[in-house]
Image (tube, rainbow, N blue to C red; front, side, top):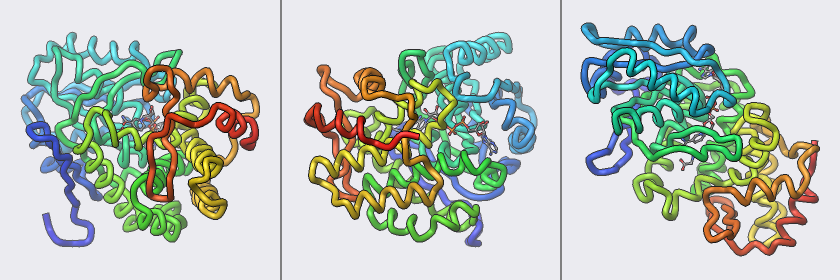
Length: 368
Ligand code: NAD
Ligand code: GLY
């Protein structure tokens, strides 16, 4: 590595023997220095989807050293394919290829591919190595780090899964050049989330840099990814299996998951649903007397600047939200647990929201 401004940066997710690096920079794909050290043995299966394969599969091929037994599996695209059936296709391909416990799966794509490949790796022969190569902003700042893997169930998002950490996360920032603007905005929702839950200075920096980020300014994007990954790595190291602080990463997600499940997976992007959900959480925090009107206005303004939705689907009634929110994995002993904001940059888990306050928020929040 050199000291040039383009030189990849490396962060660590500190989990004892299962610690792993996150490498961030341009040009990582196609350079075998980055992938080779994390392969468990000679058998490698690269799993991607039909949208990403034409763009980046060749880069991964070039980044693999000679002499390996390499297989490729290209799955259909989309959140609606994040199912146990798709994961079964990965297991089928591994078994047909005769892959053993020292194989490595490479997840090339967004969060859908990363979550499914990680889950396939967690279960194949009781656990094999995998490397995350995230190609959406959302996957680069969130889903590829921390080892949450799994699939959706018709009754709830990410309801079937496992904690299984990758051996490394390789973030090639060049891949963002082909990302559709709507997907970029969805990723920005998760970036904004870190500022809201834990880092008010980062939130202020994001407010100032939002135009640069939406314009794909490489320096701004790299800094945003690095800070987001650093915050996520810190939280995961503290609480790998979400017994405490990790739950804060779900700001906006309880409302957001309800939107995604009600509308049908894939209609709203995950990040869009989280964006609207974070505004709902901010408004609820204001109703509880924790945030001021001016602070909620800041949340609305940064989400708007990131081109994220500020209203929820017109066909979602209060009971539609409540029915799905009651299934949320954070709930304990049938109490609804929500992530709310005590201040900007300071989130908390709260399970004492009065039912009438929540119902009023859900009824009065703008529809579109
Ligand atoms: P995605 O994987 O569906 O990717 C979005 C779209 O962009 C897809 O069509 C994909 O094929 C395409 N794409 C990917 N990279 C591209 C590129 N470089 N250029 C052009 N197109 C590209 O969605 P996502 O937003 O990346 O991830 C959402 C998923 O992640 C959800 O299922 C969500 O539940 C999950 N998630 C998981 C975690 C976690 O901790 N495991 C955290 C957040 C979200
Ligand atoms: N995206 C939430 C988490 O990783 O815990």
